[in-house]
Image (tube, rainbow, N blue to C red; front, side, top):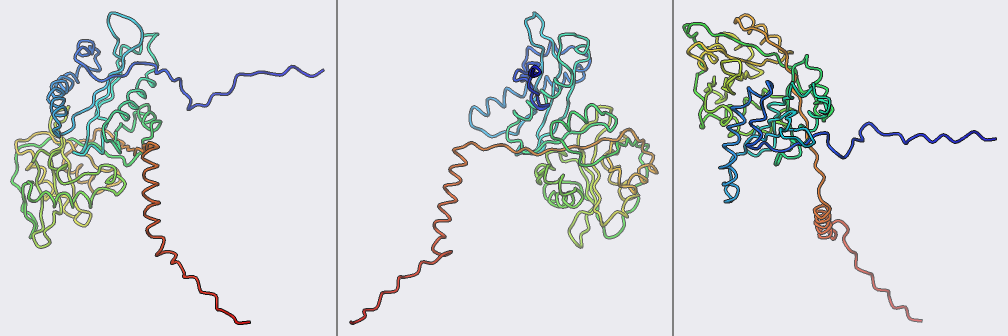
Length: 367
């Protein structure tokens, strides 16, 4: 007698997920603000209110057909099910890093602290993945994305890897509390100190091209106007007038939440000997009143880390910069149209590739 046939359920692949999302993800609206009372969301209230206010003129400009700079994308995830008070599980804030909107950055990804204690709420990993994937889908014109996470935040790093992000480099965050304004050191000849403006912005762009790695440079896709807009016109350059090139530069990036300013210091690879009094002059020009400056340095750049330590800067944490590129499938009509255009071009080149030979007439042979 044959043994009974075992009918196990079919195996389910790990990448197969339920078609129904574990939570509702939608754009930020005005009625969401009173329900964003979790301690994880309170520091972001000024940013969220500003985004809602700016969405009105952007909507009017798009309705009138006028082109305007892109704003941040804010999505919230709330719990499913009926209820008088919706439970906000998390939110994500993404912003474009250039005017064309080809590169976007995950600026904030916060999950509610109180939602973790609710038995009916989905897993925090599912909520974060839903927010991140929906932001990638809704960002207009996005071709690449970047995100950062602490090297000790293994949960966030795993989340980014699951969604296609790959590490680009590891940077160390430094804070330099500038004391009383000291006498500025003299610059080595023939270098000249110049403020950043529109006329010398191309020199800064060439400096960024020389200092940024090629893979990251392709992801960021920055142009001259992007550097000017991001810095707000606050920056200084060390220019070699003989070669008409910028050998070092420092520019303002943003106000840091911990107080002070976040700045970016760039030194040409061939001028690393300027790390010292010359680069200190650049940083002091950005904060002449003794503010705090926050800088990032590559962990593989030992010379810069040693100089920052000698300067009196304090180490805070290591940050992993991650990036991913998007491949969007084209529609079938567009693919067919492209194939027809290619075949038309090849048909025009056909006589050149394979010239037609005239038939040789058969000679008449008399009997």
